[in-house]
Length: 352
Ligand SMILES: Cc1ncc(COP(=O)(O)O)c(C=O)c1O
Image (cartoon, rainbow, N blue to C red):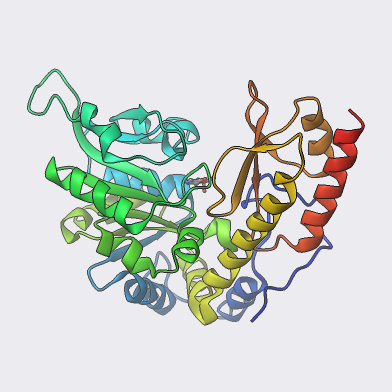
């Protein structure tokens, strides 16, 4: 089954996979499950079905909860395991550290410890120096290692890399949290199931996202340890992530797994990133800076070209000092987008 492309929208771009619309299959499912009344707040048959589907895909030892936002999923998943004197070790490029306005710190009271990485990925070797201060009352107590899969730099952890991190975390009594806002893209790259790349690899707490892959405000927290779920329903409600009309988040997750929509969407986004990479890497003025393993391309572009390019195909600068930019592809990116962007890029660069 092919992904349908609708290029009728006015603005096309590579700013973010959040900027694309909603998969037609998802809209249809919402419409189909719309008539009639069902009980609110998740006590309905559709939510039950969505949770069942998530359990089927992540394993019987998984405990899924639906929420609205990726930030909410990260904050709440982490909050379930932390006391305010704990710390979370994460990449300095991680969404929780850079792009959540301090939400984790505010809601949990804990400390985030950023670790420098060349490619957005943590490895145990980088973390050893942070495994200090245990049982010392003057220090925050390390409790969680948080990784993003795919990472914010468009790279993907292999299963062995995840297992190494999980073993490392567990050997110090820590938990492994995974921000899976783009887990579908990583699963497609690794050609493995969600279960194999999360619970089987030792992940304890997962944010599993849908919004970046064709859903609308549909995210989830999945625990792989029942003990972490005891108070979670109160945490979710108090943090305003319990939807009264839960059936529509549930409907989206149901659609996500029908005919493997999640896979088709992520396959398209990843393929388009490879095509974009192939098109720009041969342009002499452009230097691709990261491996393209999911749906992001990072590149250094001559600085004067950036605002001109942004006018035709909007995207965000990543590092204003170096001229590094981030181009994200989406479930609805198509070959025409890549061709048009490449052509305009060449024109703009030759006119500098
Ligand atoms: C890696 C990552 N995690 C989480 C999120 C969740 O964000 P939001 O709260 O905007 O849904 C994002 C969104 O850009 C992201 O890139």
